[in-house]
Length: 187
Ligand code: IMP
Ligand code: MG
Image (cartoon, rainbow, N blue to C red):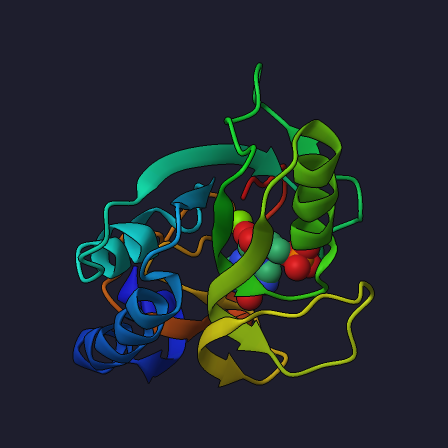
């Protein structure tokens, strides 16, 4: 599996140090607010587990399951929600957690869906990674772990065709591994 990694961007210890800082900011911002965290599956699973254990607030946690890729490495703008019912967000401050902000389409669709289905007091976004690029959708992330270039990365929850999520680090996937793929992707 590691042979498919061209270059490691963030080792586990680097991620953990950054999570300490992110958790401090989030704790500070949401102190005395009714916070519900919405983790976007599957990509934010590992990030959410490590981050939220560093946030000593009486928050609620819910998950959203979405699919935004339909093959390849670019989201196509069509975001499918697997949820039968949406989480109860009325009168609560919502923090959406996702693995990466790329085109912004997925998070924009999620934000729209939330506002359509309820009356949250606020909706903010926290991502582990943000690609520095021109985005298809206007979307601001309020808490960002790391900014990266416009490269396809895997590990620490991020996948390529559902593989590599369990790597403890974030790394750039080798071009040869990328060209071997095909099929559907989710979150
Ligand atoms: P967006 O809608 O283009 O912002 O894409 C968001 C979703 O695409 C993320 O939640 C990831 O699941 C996936 N994604 C975007 N870039 C990457 C990447 O470099 N590696 C792995 N997954 C990615
Ligand atoms: Mg994915």
